[in-house]
Amino acid sequence: MFKSIAYKEWIKIRLVVWVALGLGLMALINIFLKVRHDILFVDAANYWYSFLFRGFTYFGILKFFPFVAGLAIAIAQYFPETVNKRIKLTFHLPVSENGVLISMHLFGALVLIGVLLTILGLFTAGSAIFFPGEIIRASLLTMMPWFLGGLATYFLVALILLEPMWIFRGLYTAVAAGFITIFLASAPIGSFRPVLLPLGLITLLLAGVVLFSGYRFRKGEM
Image (cartoon, rainbow, N blue to C red; front, side):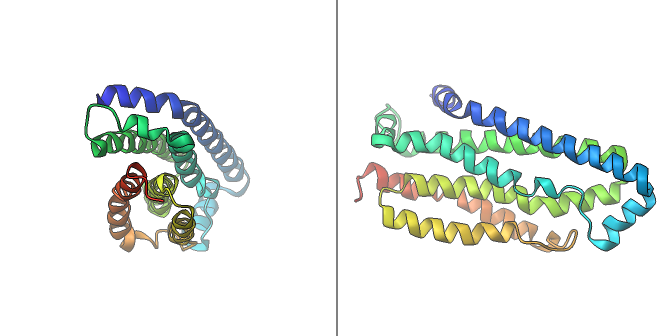
Protein backbone atom coordinates (compact mmCIF):
# COMPACT_ATOMS: atom_id res chain seq x y z
CA MET A 1 0.00 0.00 0.00
CA PHE A 2 2.82 2.41 0.83
CA LYS A 3 4.26 1.91 -2.66
CA SER A 4 0.93 2.87 -4.22
CA ILE A 5 0.62 5.97 -2.04
CA ALA A 6 4.25 6.91 -2.71
CA TYR A 7 3.70 6.65 -6.45
CA LYS A 8 0.57 8.84 -6.23
CA GLU A 9 2.44 11.46 -4.19
CA TRP A 10 5.45 11.35 -6.50
CA ILE A 11 3.23 12.14 -9.50
CA LYS A 12 2.08 15.29 -7.72
CA ILE A 13 5.44 16.59 -6.54
CA ARG A 14 7.95 15.32 -9.09
CA LEU A 15 8.06 18.54 -11.14
CA VAL A 16 8.59 20.64 -8.03
CA VAL A 17 11.35 18.29 -6.87
CA TRP A 18 13.25 18.51 -10.16
CA VAL A 19 12.86 22.30 -10.25
CA ALA A 20 14.10 22.56 -6.65
CA LEU A 21 17.13 20.42 -7.44
CA GLY A 22 17.83 22.48 -10.55
CA LEU A 23 17.64 25.75 -8.63
CA GLY A 24 19.84 24.33 -5.90
CA LEU A 25 22.47 23.25 -8.43
CA MET A 26 22.38 26.68 -10.07
CA ALA A 27 22.88 28.31 -6.67
CA LEU A 28 25.86 26.05 -5.93
CA ILE A 29 27.44 26.80 -9.30
CA ASN A 30 27.01 30.51 -8.62
CA ILE A 31 28.56 30.15 -5.16
CA PHE A 32 31.69 28.31 -6.26
CA LEU A 33 32.27 30.39 -9.37
CA LYS A 34 32.22 33.48 -7.17
CA VAL A 35 34.44 31.83 -4.56
CA ARG A 36 36.97 30.88 -7.21
CA HIS A 37 36.90 34.40 -8.64
CA ASP A 38 37.34 36.07 -5.24
CA ILE A 39 40.15 33.75 -4.13
CA LEU A 40 42.06 34.44 -7.33
CA PHE A 41 41.85 38.17 -6.72
CA VAL A 42 42.24 38.51 -2.94
CA ASP A 43 44.31 35.43 -2.03
CA ALA A 44 42.92 32.38 -0.22
CA ALA A 45 44.34 33.32 3.20
CA ASN A 46 42.67 36.74 3.14
CA TYR A 47 39.42 35.19 1.95
CA TRP A 48 39.48 32.65 4.79
CA TYR A 49 40.27 35.44 7.27
CA SER A 50 37.19 37.37 6.14
CA PHE A 51 35.05 34.30 6.77
CA LEU A 52 36.49 33.41 10.19
CA PHE A 53 36.83 36.87 11.73
CA ARG A 54 34.68 39.33 9.76
CA GLY A 55 31.49 37.29 9.48
CA PHE A 56 31.57 36.98 5.69
CA THR A 57 29.48 34.07 4.39
CA TYR A 58 30.03 32.83 0.87
CA PHE A 59 26.90 30.65 0.92
CA GLY A 60 24.25 33.25 1.81
CA ILE A 61 22.38 32.58 -1.43
CA LEU A 62 21.29 29.21 0.04
CA LYS A 63 19.60 30.76 3.07
CA PHE A 64 16.06 30.64 1.70
CA PHE A 65 16.46 27.54 -0.49
CA PRO A 66 15.26 25.03 2.18
CA PHE A 67 12.29 27.27 3.02
CA VAL A 68 11.23 27.59 -0.61
CA ALA A 69 11.74 23.86 -1.25
CA GLY A 70 9.68 22.86 1.81
CA LEU A 71 6.94 25.34 0.94
CA ALA A 72 6.74 24.28 -2.71
CA ILE A 73 6.70 20.54 -2.02
CA ALA A 74 4.02 20.90 0.69
CA ILE A 75 1.80 22.98 -1.59
CA ALA A 76 2.27 20.62 -4.54
CA GLN A 77 1.44 17.64 -2.34
CA TYR A 78 -1.44 18.90 -0.22
CA PHE A 79 -3.17 21.69 -2.11
CA PRO A 80 -4.60 19.32 -4.79
CA GLU A 81 -5.99 17.18 -1.95
CA THR A 82 -7.97 20.12 -0.53
CA VAL A 83 -9.68 20.99 -3.84
CA ASN A 84 -13.24 19.72 -3.43
CA LYS A 85 -11.92 17.73 -0.46
CA ARG A 86 -10.31 15.13 -2.72
CA ILE A 87 -8.31 13.73 0.15
CA LYS A 88 -11.50 12.14 1.45
CA LEU A 89 -11.27 9.71 -1.47
CA THR A 90 -7.82 8.72 -0.23
CA PHE A 91 -9.21 8.20 3.27
CA HIS A 92 -11.60 5.59 1.85
CA LEU A 93 -8.74 3.23 1.02
CA PRO A 94 -8.85 -0.13 2.89
CA VAL A 95 -6.28 1.03 5.48
CA SER A 96 -6.52 3.25 8.54
CA GLU A 97 -7.06 6.94 7.83
CA ASN A 98 -4.12 7.92 10.02
CA GLY A 99 -2.00 5.31 8.27
CA VAL A 100 -2.76 6.86 4.87
CA LEU A 101 -1.97 10.37 6.09
CA ILE A 102 1.22 9.26 7.81
CA SER A 103 2.35 7.47 4.63
CA MET A 104 1.70 10.59 2.54
CA HIS A 105 3.46 12.81 5.04
CA LEU A 106 6.40 10.47 5.48
CA PHE A 107 6.94 10.21 1.73
CA GLY A 108 6.87 13.97 1.25
CA ALA A 109 9.25 14.53 4.16
CA LEU A 110 11.68 11.89 2.88
CA VAL A 111 11.70 13.42 -0.59
CA LEU A 112 12.36 16.87 0.87
CA ILE A 113 15.14 15.47 3.06
CA GLY A 114 16.62 13.82 -0.04
CA VAL A 115 16.63 17.15 -1.89
CA LEU A 116 18.18 19.02 1.03
CA LEU A 117 20.82 16.36 1.68
CA THR A 118 21.76 16.31 -2.02
CA ILE A 119 22.35 20.06 -2.04
CA LEU A 120 24.14 19.90 1.32
CA GLY A 121 26.37 17.05 0.13
CA LEU A 122 27.29 18.85 -3.09
CA PHE A 123 27.96 22.02 -1.11
CA THR A 124 30.30 20.14 1.22
CA ALA A 125 32.14 18.50 -1.67
CA GLY A 126 32.52 21.82 -3.50
CA SER A 127 33.66 23.63 -0.36
CA ALA A 128 36.35 21.00 0.22
CA ILE A 129 38.05 22.18 -2.99
CA PHE A 130 38.55 25.70 -1.65
CA PHE A 131 38.43 25.60 2.15
CA PRO A 132 39.96 23.70 5.10
CA GLY A 133 37.82 21.49 7.30
CA GLU A 134 37.35 24.13 10.01
CA ILE A 135 35.63 26.51 7.61
CA ILE A 136 33.47 23.74 6.16
CA ARG A 137 32.31 22.65 9.62
CA ALA A 138 31.54 26.23 10.63
CA SER A 139 29.61 26.69 7.38
CA LEU A 140 27.52 23.57 7.94
CA LEU A 141 26.73 24.59 11.53
CA THR A 142 25.60 27.99 10.26
CA MET A 143 23.43 26.45 7.54
CA MET A 144 21.85 23.73 9.66
CA PRO A 145 19.05 25.93 11.10
CA TRP A 146 18.10 26.90 7.54
CA PHE A 147 17.73 23.26 6.53
CA LEU A 148 15.79 22.39 9.69
CA GLY A 149 13.61 25.38 8.88
CA GLY A 150 12.87 23.87 5.47
CA LEU A 151 11.53 20.72 7.13
CA ALA A 152 9.57 22.74 9.68
CA THR A 153 8.06 24.74 6.81
CA TYR A 154 6.92 21.55 5.09
CA PHE A 155 5.27 20.25 8.27
CA LEU A 156 3.54 23.53 9.09
CA VAL A 157 2.27 24.17 5.56
CA ALA A 158 0.77 20.67 5.51
CA LEU A 159 -0.99 21.51 8.79
CA ILE A 160 -2.34 24.77 7.32
CA LEU A 161 -3.53 23.32 4.02
CA LEU A 162 -5.40 20.41 5.60
CA GLU A 163 -7.14 22.63 8.15
CA PRO A 164 -10.81 22.90 7.06
CA MET A 165 -11.61 26.26 8.72
CA TRP A 166 -10.19 29.46 7.25
CA ILE A 167 -10.03 31.22 10.60
CA PHE A 168 -7.74 28.51 11.95
CA ARG A 169 -5.71 28.54 8.73
CA GLY A 170 -5.05 32.24 9.29
CA LEU A 171 -4.09 31.64 12.91
CA TYR A 172 -1.76 28.76 12.01
CA THR A 173 -0.19 30.85 9.24
CA ALA A 174 0.56 33.74 11.59
CA VAL A 175 2.10 31.43 14.19
CA ALA A 176 4.08 29.50 11.56
CA ALA A 177 5.44 32.70 10.00
CA GLY A 178 6.74 33.88 13.35
CA PHE A 179 8.17 30.48 14.22
CA ILE A 180 10.02 29.97 10.93
CA THR A 181 11.83 33.31 11.36
CA ILE A 182 13.71 31.70 14.28
CA PHE A 183 15.42 29.33 11.85
CA LEU A 184 16.32 32.18 9.50
CA ALA A 185 17.58 34.65 12.09
CA SER A 186 20.89 36.33 11.30
CA ALA A 187 23.72 35.38 13.64
CA PRO A 188 27.53 35.12 13.71
CA ILE A 189 29.16 32.07 12.12
CA GLY A 190 28.39 28.91 14.07
CA SER A 191 26.50 30.70 16.86
CA PHE A 192 23.45 28.44 16.50
CA ARG A 193 25.47 25.39 17.56
CA PRO A 194 24.15 25.31 21.18
CA VAL A 195 20.50 25.31 20.03
CA LEU A 196 20.73 22.88 17.12
CA LEU A 197 19.55 19.95 19.24
CA PRO A 198 16.46 21.78 20.59
CA LEU A 199 15.64 23.04 17.09
CA GLY A 200 16.00 19.52 15.74
CA LEU A 201 13.70 18.09 18.43
CA ILE A 202 11.09 20.80 17.82
CA THR A 203 11.21 20.09 14.08
CA LEU A 204 10.75 16.39 14.76
CA LEU A 205 7.73 17.09 16.96
CA LEU A 206 6.19 19.24 14.23
CA ALA A 207 6.13 16.19 11.97
CA GLY A 208 3.07 14.93 13.83
CA VAL A 209 0.92 18.08 13.90
CA VAL A 210 -0.55 17.30 10.48
CA LEU A 211 -2.56 14.50 12.13
CA PHE A 212 -4.60 17.11 13.99
CA SER A 213 -5.70 18.93 10.85
CA GLY A 214 -6.14 15.60 9.08
CA TYR A 215 -8.53 14.47 11.82
CA ARG A 216 -10.55 17.69 11.59
CA PHE A 217 -10.60 17.51 7.78
CA ARG A 218 -11.89 13.98 7.52
CA LYS A 219 -14.49 14.58 10.27
CA GLY A 220 -15.81 17.60 8.39
CA GLU A 221 -15.12 20.24 11.05
CA MET A 222 -16.55 23.56 9.79
